[in-house]
Amino acid sequence: MDIMNISSSCHSDFLRQVEEESGQNLSLCYQCGKCTAGCPYSLEYDIPVSRIMRLVQIGRKEQVLRSESLWLCATCESCSVRCPNEIDVARIMDVLRHMARKEGYAGIKTIKTFWDSFLGSARKNGRIFEVGLLMKYITQTGRFWTDLTLGPRMLPKGKIHFTPHVIKGRKEIAEIFRRYEEEYGK
Ligand code: SF4
Ligand code: SF4
Image (cartoon, rainbow, N blue to C red; front, side, top):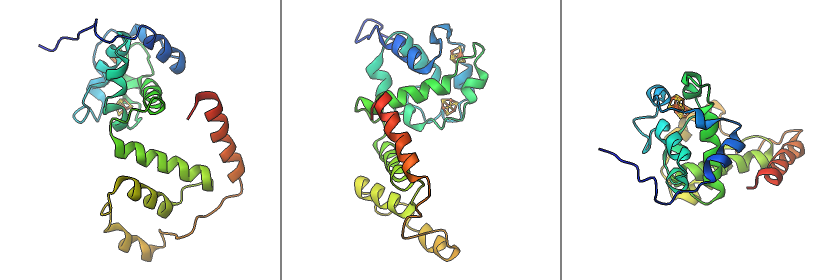
């Protein structure tokens, strides 16, 4: 039987912090498991989403922030819709992912690298520059053969551009990133 060791490495402030940042009352969760039952990624998760909610309740910060599940979550919101206590579970997963990122945890490094490259591209160009994003991702992860076969098929369809398309509101978008970092950190 899987028993949680509640006494080991508990952070009493963790629940309060997650509730404050997400605006959710996670204390209402009574472990019915409906969120996990509806989660399309349950089979891939190292920790099911309902169990993550429980681990947050008992302050198991490190275990939660190290979890691969945070990086696999697709923010589909099925868990939020199914929760009988109207807890926005997807929002909590988002907050946890952000905390993990801020505190240097990356359950799945390649996914974190992709996110960072994606956001960096949006910040710099005002929209995504696919080739630049891909080059950054490949050089940082060493996955040189990723989606190699897609290029020749997309090229004739005009789907690949070799220079970024700079939009009018580029400065305003960069300003959104700046304000976000000012408030919540990188
Ligand atoms: S939002 Fe994430 S945790 Fe919730 S059901 Fe979708 S994939 Fe699962
Ligand atoms: S559906 Fe809601 S109450 Fe049930 S386990 Fe998930 S978060 Fe907790």
